[in-house]
Length: 362
Ligand code: 13P
Ligand code: SF4
Image: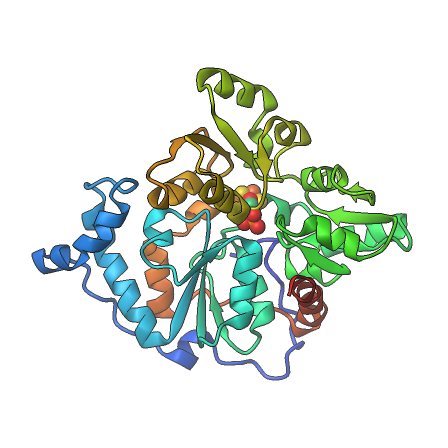
């Protein structure tokens, strides 16, 4: 099935069809997935690390997949990039590199592995492919989209350029390659202010997240023009009133929020930053009680490494991030699916927009 966020391959655009990933790398047999006494013993130290966030009843189901994935990724010469919103059994037990969108893009650029499995959503896998055009990039479920990426098309960006002639366009990395190809430079939530200011223009269009645009606008003298329809369906649900209620219920509570939340929510928070910015804030500040105003898996993932911090957990699930599981990661490695491909005519300008951002950040 193809969604609108997936890059369409224009027939005849590439010189000769490349054999698909399964043909290039071969398919292996599905490993045994029994939870034996020997496996239980071998996996004990790993379980000890994650036992506060993975209930004992779930471990016998996860452990055989974890073992099989870690064995197979070595055999295949593959790396697994995992976004901070992956569930703890993925984040702590099979990921080679973990991080926010910018960190994952950088890791993808540095990777010398032949195969990259993106445990995250489709735009992240596409970014990895843009930066590694000759490597095999797999996403365990290509339906793992993003409401922001879905909210805008390449034609929408062309229309905006006509409406605002001469105004540079910054696109959030949460977009398709087709949209990136139409813009001047990409940004992520961790570098959006820096990217906007780097253009040296009095007005900049920042698409598609209208709340990120409003939040950046509040932090710079540059006029940041938003794209009204764009919003994250997960972060837009939080309200400032909800934050106030939690503060009343939990005296001394520190609240940290993602910049995809509304400006009112950010105003009511003690800190705002990218997913990794939020993790660093907890590690640096070691609050007694903290509430992470973002996707649900974040608190679980951070709690493992910060047992002294109490996490108050109102959260919203990202249904797209949750499409990635140990089962489909293993399927990716066994069957070499689902391969991410990008029309070369789209990939060249989209890559330039991502690389411009990476050059800016060093
Ligand atoms: P980060 O770049 O902060 O990881 O955000 C990505 C994202 O999709 C948050 O919803
Ligand atoms: Fe997209 Fe929001 Fe999910 Fe992040 S949390 S992937 S912005 S829908």
